[in-house]
Length: 479
Image (cartoon, rainbow, N blue to C red):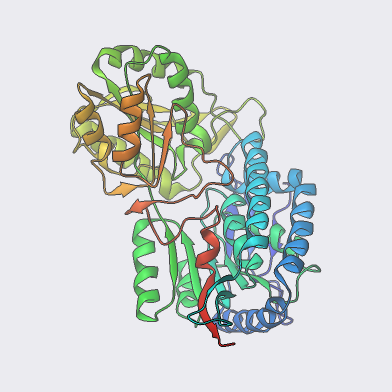
């Protein structure tokens, strides 16, 4: 993008917006300003919430099928804008264009699955206590839902919240990350003449704007982001008795047993660890490998990391994009240094990168650390970058103990040729999602859910998501 976009603080746009900008976004690969955005004031937040409240009345009056038909048309529009959306994502988040397009495709598949679930999600009739009596369980929309989304998946995460919330009859106020708002604004604009005004709103700004929204009489909150921020939101929501869904961090382990095809396992691990430059809550960050395979795994992973091609996301040769923010790059650097000081060995990488074609870029070398210390920072801290830790184990008990030795519980994987070990792992791994003999990418119709410090509430994706966005009512009708 040659000329930075100038965007308003809220959608629908307030009539008195003057065009003043509150913050800028930059291409993390090139350092160039790509957007200037208004940051919502207290008055603009209040105006948007009032607009959403009015929109809820009109939107919730439609039937579930009517809503889903309109949302299906919206998804069709989004699909037609794939190239523009992918460009928005790559320019602000940094991921390669191919990854941006793949994210959009997955988001649309999940969203269309969700519409199918929503069409069938409704009341249930049960026998009454006497002849002619009817007991019915109803589901109703909650009202105005606040969706707060992170910078790493600018399309997938918003749609995971918007589609089930809207399909259930709620109005939604979307607060995207201040680092990657362009794609979210395109999503909302694509719906502007399909939905009643106010049914889908957007508010731009940083953490202070999010805090104001959280405390502003919202009926439910869905948040994806860091554990510290999630705790703050949960505390405010709890004090106000507002339902909250929190999708937080992960320190995801893969167990590599004495498999016959180690290369296939290492290929899957590399893909699951380094997409989005490791800036995924579901990225594999710990490889717990049987001692008999440790040397071969170290050599195989080192070679695969050397084949990754860091660079700007619009370069078709790039397979590893930049780190999205300077703060995140600093965190990765600090944690890798701390891991080294605590005894971890850097097998490859471990440093920032300066690329000839992107000297201002925020790049970190794909990194493999070796440590058998479960207390090393590389084993315990969510680094959220292109960093893998390799740890050896000697018994099944030890492998499972190491995998579970974290406060997080998002996703895990195991590669094994033994059915008994696979069955034991699926019963004992303390994560919301468990994968056997493949990476950590979830299917489009399965719950995306974490336990422990990785999440609170129902997961996104899957039919149970709709329960969060609705209230339950027991109705008794005497004959």
